[in-house]
Image (tube, rainbow, N blue to C red; front, side, top):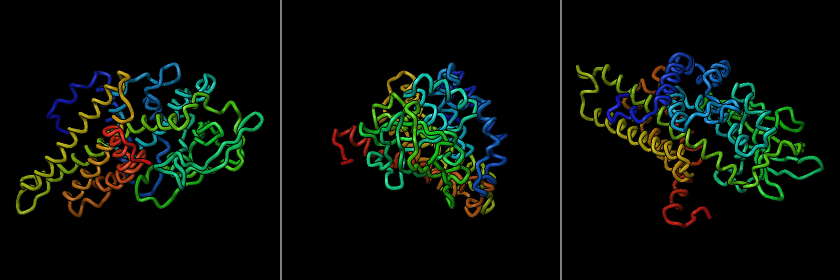
Length: 385
């Protein structure tokens, strides 16, 4: 994509290096196979080791725990390039990093960190994040999953829904109600009474493995409780803030892919004996797409810099996620229209991005929820209740 505002000059040398290496990875390893993976609804598991070798799992986690100690700017450009390939790929890495490794690093004991984080960074342990339930999406405080204290541990009962990586995860970070409030637990896949099932027939994020988690009288040892999760639901939501930051960048990666495809198509496709790009209405659409991408990138860069300075909060991240997800979906739909009938075929990639972005628009906080978060910030009035 053209860099009219010279945004790349705002990136550190390290961020630019990350951007180039992940771009090459996506072009070489993802784009040639992703349409087939999408159509067959399969996740390309053979990419896990290659992703780990690039250091993309938990890159902001300190090096002594297996991460790279990278900045949020670096993490952002990684997410942008990954989702330029496919939302499923970015989701997989976001869940492993922001919703798996981050809560263990932030709220886990030293033993838990030593046990899991390095192996997670190597892709030897895959994780998922259990917060959403069949009847509890935008209102996680109404969750029905419970953890009852018993001798030496806890008895976990309940279920979680729409969980990325669930069927292949080795551990689940599960949030449950206790007598002392919501707490987080590390549940290993071989735990008696714990099972995961796959959700089929999705028309979006088809290359992502999504499932349900089921807990029936699962005994969870005291050592598997995240000791720092005493903040309750706020602890779980802080993990979502990390993931939403990655989504803000990732969604714009999908938008860039759609814009680039539409630009190339309209420059080469001829109608009425001249390129589509020569028509005024086509240029108007291309300019609007490009403008929104530029504005979103500037917003994302600002939030990344504030994250790196320790000055960001959840409202800033909500603004970025809300804006990126909304604009990316609009851009994908515009690109699909510019491609005409060809826009609905996987050969041109746009329809895949458009369908994926329907999910990105909804998960990790719906558009309406982010509006309410920002509305509360602006007015001081809580419209959630």
